[in-house]
Length: 454
Figure (cartoon, rainbow, N blue to C red):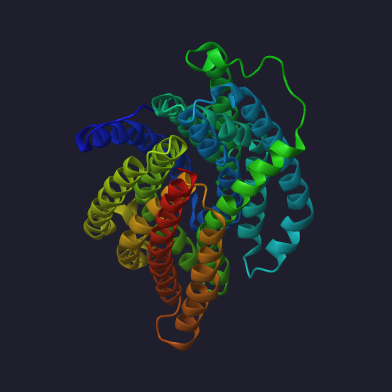
């Protein structure tokens, strides 16, 4: 990042930071997209099993990634304030924290996976696929979480093209191993949907290896010597990371887990309904990478300017980012509406299942705009290190308002499973309104704090 002096410069710099993030996010999500699409062609049961497995995994993945995301605003504000000498220490603590979080998730998974699956009304084969898909993914947890810590370091320097290139290198690896492990090509065992989990684990190890090499050998990262003079675990640094990262992680967890909760509640319906719901979520979530990328870029830009106490510049980035995300959100709604029928056949050749997917995608059109507002605002608030109130807002919007509304619509109206999507739209809209108000409050308080310091 660098200081800018005009709106045109800010737009150009934000775009240069954001578009590699977008390519990275789309690339990372394409791994899940490929898992789901290829599993669907292995059979409806495989798609349902992977759907349930993904619905349990994605909230954990995004929640842990959110905790480790605390590195980005911390390092960005340090850079803006001229305190880059602390970079190596914080990155090392982020890696230690990633190891600890991996151990915690592994222990919880060992004791809770079977009981959670037993609570669901799944066909035995679908439950088996879900369990072993998750076991396969688990083999790649450690490298994936450490990669997330290292990515926070890379992105905080504004070097987002680096993570983009690493992700693009990984996509062919993921596609190849999905193909051979799901369908049993080239002498590999035919594992069906289970193979998608192991393919993802192999890909995570590949990403980890390339990222470690890059941060150790390639400038400007090698200049920070993050692997030399290794520091032990610092509880004060962990406390700082967790105080900032836990609300971020929980905010993202509550937003993503409502989709997972809906998938689990849909276990009362047929395997085809579960598969169609997951396929529609999978396609719509691909376009969600656009506002998410705006959020990541805004965290970096706003964090840098806030650290340097250039609040007018932070406001300018906020306006540019939110307006840009809103425009892209409108475009995403149009894309889903126009492509809903061909998109359905990406996941299946069964006409009845494809028709169900198309119906779910119609509902997905309506929550694109809410996503395009609330997600970038979350990124701005993280740049200001304001994370606790947004967490409570997400909890209230999604779990106290959205999910109950969806359950009521599903149970007490003719909408059935589509009623849950009404709940998703409601939760996203309420969250967007709450966060917009919170941003106004934070900007006023931050400005007053600076005036008091002067």
